[in-house]
Amino acid sequence: MLGWTNPLVKHDGGVLDYDDEATHYDRTRGGGPRAEAAAAALDGLIPSRSVVLDLAVGTGIVAAELEALGHRVVGVDLSVGMLRHAGRRLPGRVARADATALPLPSSSVDTVTAVWLLHLLDDAEPVLAEVARVLRPGGLFLTTADKIAAVRVASNTIREDRPHTDTCAQLTALGARHHLQLAAATSFIGHGQGQPGGTDPRYPVLGFRRAGDSAS
Image (cartoon, rainbow, N blue to C red; front, side):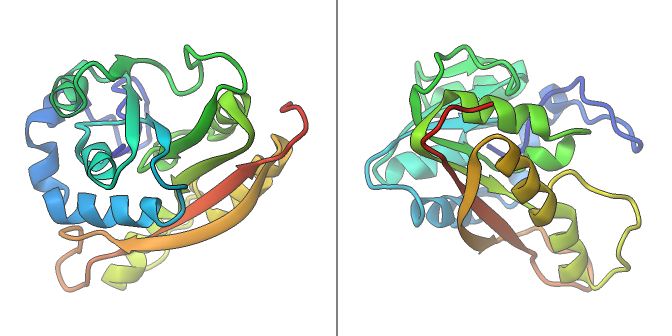
């Protein structure tokens, strides 16, 4: 859940090998306090005691907090290193899978979550299209948005000119193409994520409701 940990995704600034990062990922990304804050924000939008499909489950630290709040979480990720950690937190309920080609039937899932995933991608639309496919009509998709912008606001740094794939406006437009209608929003503090001279960022979370008609 801590981003789509695909070691093959390429970016202008290079690629982060999440298999190598797995052993110290939690420690360097805010640990328990950030995971608890993220899970509490998601829990505020998810119906009680839901079954949740968590894309990019990462080490499973946020998923485990969702479980502690009464939900049943199944996680997928591409990083074998991350899944080793997630498997200890969600025994028997994690799998290696691509967020753009989920091994699930259409209209079979009530809730999908994706935390720190879409900002890593060159194009978020294939993930949104796949989420729309697997969600049941009326199902909920929760995702973080504007991650880099949140960090820059917190650290009072100059805004980048480079566009990002997880802006609220862009995700709302892409979601509409695939019958995902913006229905809710919240945010949480990214504990331990502040830059020197700044404060901890507040990350937006968007909630999209799957419309009742067929997904494109």
